Length: 396
Image (cartoon, rainbow, N blue to C red):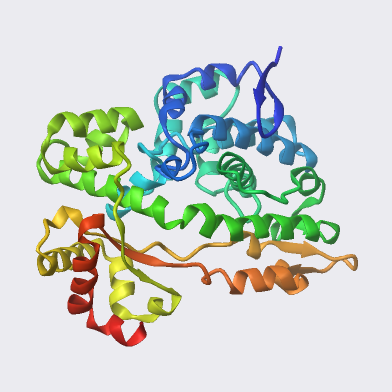
C-alpha cells in the first residue's frame, strides 16, 4: 500500500512500500536538516526548505517522466530511487559547503554514489528489489536512465527550480505537466522534446534565467555564503577539525561546532547569526571575466586566498574579514536539449527557439563577482582593491 505525502509543489506524492524504509533511513532524514539554498533565507525569509523535500519532489517527477516514456516498472523504480538519493552526499548548507569539497577535487555526487553502493542504503535498496550499483550509476549520469536524473531536462532540475522559486517568492511559468507529456526517448540523443513542447521549454529556461540574478547570484545571498565559508576556513585553519570531520554534519551541527571552538570562526558565525553581513567593496561585471587575474581567482582557490590577504593587508584588516567571491558563469544545460520536428528530424533547442538562443547568449548579463568587507571598512577595502588589482581601474 502506497503512502501519500503532501507537498506544496506537487500536491499528493504517492510513496511505494519499497521506498519508505529508504526515506526513513538516517542518511535521508539528515537531509531534513540541510538547507536547500544555503544562506538564502537571510535574504528571502521563506527560503527555509530543505534537501529532504526536494529529494522527494525529484523522485516524484522522475517517476512521472519515466512512466510517461513508457519505461518498465523496474526502470521507473530505479529512476525514482536515484532521484530520491541523488543529494544524500551533500555537506551542510548544500552548495555553500560544496565549494570547499570542490577545492579538494571532489563533488557531492561522488559521496552520494558511495553511500548508495555500500552500507545501509545499499541493503535497503536490495530489499526493495533494486540494484545499488545501477542506482548509483544513474546518479553519476551513467546509463540509459541517467538523463532523467542528471541531464538536459531532468527531475532534479525541474523540481529545484519550481521549489526554489516558490519559497523565494519568484513567479514562474514552468509547466511541468506539459513537459512530462512532450518528452521522448531517442537512441542517439537520449531525451528529446516534441516540437509542440517548445513553449514549455522556453518557460523553463526563462525561469532559470531569472533565478540567477534574483536568487542564486544575488549579492546578499553570496555575501552570506562568503561569510559562512570564511568561518569554516578559520575553523579548519585553527586545527579544530578536518573537512572530512564536517562533511557529514547538519547545518546546526556545523554552526554549533564553530561557535563552541571560539576564535575568528566563532566571531564570523556571530555576525551570520546577527545578520551583520559583509558589504560590497567592489563589484565586477561580465567584462572582467576576460581578465587573467579574475579567471585565476575563480579557478584557483589559493590565488583567491592570496589576493584576499593582500587586499586585507593594504586595508589594515585581518585576513578573515575580506572575502572574494567569483562565481562560475550560469549554466543552461537545457539549451543542449534536442527537439523532434514534425518531419522526424532533430535539431538543438536554440536553433528552433529564438528566445532560448537569446537567453543562452544573455546568460552572462547578470553575472557579477565581488570583494566583500565589513560595512565600516568598505571604503578602505575598495581603495585597497584598486592598489592590489590596478588592472581593474582601466575597466571601471
